Length: 268
Image 1 (cartoon, helix red, strand yellow):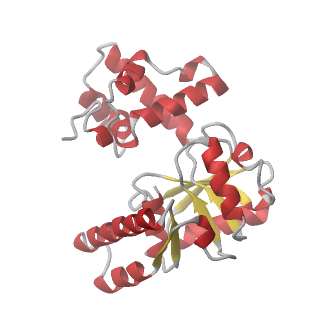
Image 2 (tube, one colour):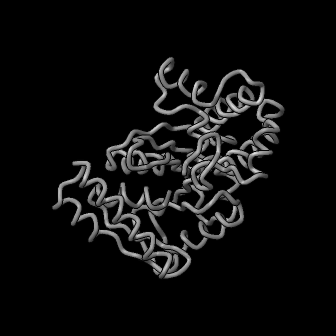
């Protein structure tokens, strides 16, 4: 996700500092972004001149401490673990950005923001994968988030040539709650023998004009991620988000989707 977010900023004439755990990892992320830029040129989405400008706009940082102070925005995009995210956010806040955001898909902004000294400048910016082709940012307003911060984020989203959907802080927000509910029901249908995965996906893609069916989407996101979010939302909202046994079995077997080579589809 960090690669995709950095790409959107870089091709929108922003200077981007991408930080990771060390210089090797940061440079690897930059190289991956360059690969995405090259792909955009091949598909005719970027000119050679624009691509070169974007490449030069990306600067690797071996740690958060190497990020310049006073940036317009810092977007945290580490994995969905509350304590890990909090530690990164506290370090990022120390660089005194005008806006601090978390690219979380379901963790409460109020929970993440508790250790922060300036929670009014903190909000959620939930990008969608792949970031370079999905033009939506779900903007999550925490209880302490100021109107000025939301206004700044909306301006940033517009500068990225993307659309914003503003929601109040709640477990799963809007997109994750709706998307996960559809995905869990699709898994139940497979376990009950209602239809094959491809046919279930086809009903949503052709019948409801979804760009991708819920099972293929889950394969791309990763069923371990889906399971963790389902367990989190089941605690918040009850039985309707309880993960089906088939989902638990697939994760236990390592059938996580594209990243493991197999989920409901064979990705090899």
